[in-house]
Length: 387
Image (cartoon, rainbow, N blue to C red):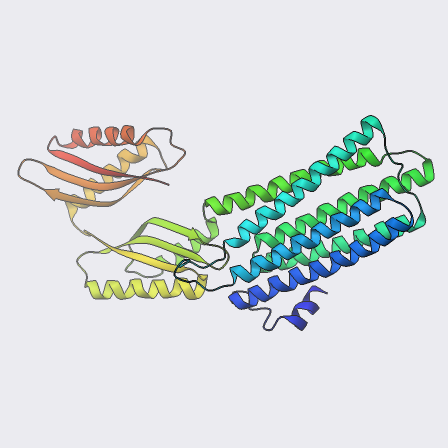
């Protein structure tokens, strides 16, 4: 069904790297969500009113709020697909993270409300669960509709890597669980006269709250910025090191401005004795391949280093050993020697993982001490990179 809808309403729907295609898929998801939730709302509200069921009527209003979530999703995709402009030079794709956070608030609100109502009913009692055939039928159809919406949004969310669509899918699954709890308690009450509605509601509310917190944290992490996926980092390095001119890489920074808007900057070390125009040509080719093969915008700094100088190679290796003695995962880059009349500067950067508890000053002091032991005229000029 998902493939059929995409084929009918989204031109070139398989080309998900195209922002316009991505926007149309998001719009399709929002429109389908609005239609299905409004249909569920109308059906539940009519049946709930006829059989005088507060539970079914309340579930109908929940579907109405879900239609609102789909409206939020639809609006977010319209905004995120807008091209970059002077005020937003990196585009508008991050609006999806804001929309995901709004949906998480709605899920948390539903979870808190359900838990409160369940607790009140457990402690003080309340309306009996409706056990009519009409109630059972409408609840069963609602579960099927919500499960379909979950599968629909989850599949499309994975296809276009949309956080707001994944959040909407999680919302649909939470609703299906909530309605399933009402249905289970209805069936148990119908055949055994044992009232479990409030207890089932409390359990489901906890699951809903857990899902809401998870969506909120994921959206918050995306807004704050997270470490890039290891696979992407490795693929970037593979492209760079496929060129013999690239001798090393450091200061790799990956900025994610939303789906399809990834920017990469780094320093690539090249032989300083080679023709700079040839090295620059290789850097240009690397940037083009990063865009064509990985879909990222690359900005690479050409970093010439001394290659083949015995003293430089020897001291670089010694300093690397010193860094590894402090912490095995530490390493150095941009190493160069600047001789003078009274002393010689050894200038380099040291990469210190965030897990290392030592302060930057402590790391620098240890390295300076060890370098001074090689030769008292050596002075270390060190920049600490936390990664």
